[in-house]
Length: 111
Length: 114
Image (cartoon, rainbow over all chains, first blue to last red; front, side, top):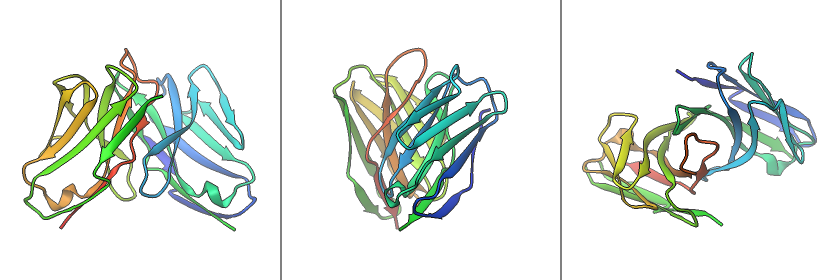
């Protein structure tokens, strides 16, 4: 059974700091991993999708890495801004029709 | 482009009352459809998914049910709500195929059972 864990559960940083969010999964036989952003009371928005053949993906100030053998992924946010405040979730495919999500990391970037 | 709608956005219901949440998708055909529940501080829990009209798979036994009367319509229902049904309900869709690459989420419904 695939289990996804995210550490830390919450993180508060001053504006401008670089930060790393962590995601681990128990079954390394995945074909991709995805990072989502969720604003309070809203749905999920996809940020980055890393295929199993890739080691990282970049979008603007975001960089996600994937190490399948160790069952880990990191989301790196450079030069954080107050607008980055949200909950970040990672997810991996499970069976053929489902995804497994972590509980998320709630990020607060203080001005 | 594809869009996904959910309504209502918020709902407050007494214990024992019925429930009906609706989700519709535009701009795509034959999608996989999903209902998730998100409790405070916890991850998303898959409740139901559907690969076609009238085809519903249940992941978690509970007093909720789902129906797919049309290709792009997914409904979550209950005959009698429990306090434990409170939470944030998300509908999602993915491209029908042999595997899920990504899911696209609706704005969610906040349900409070009193």
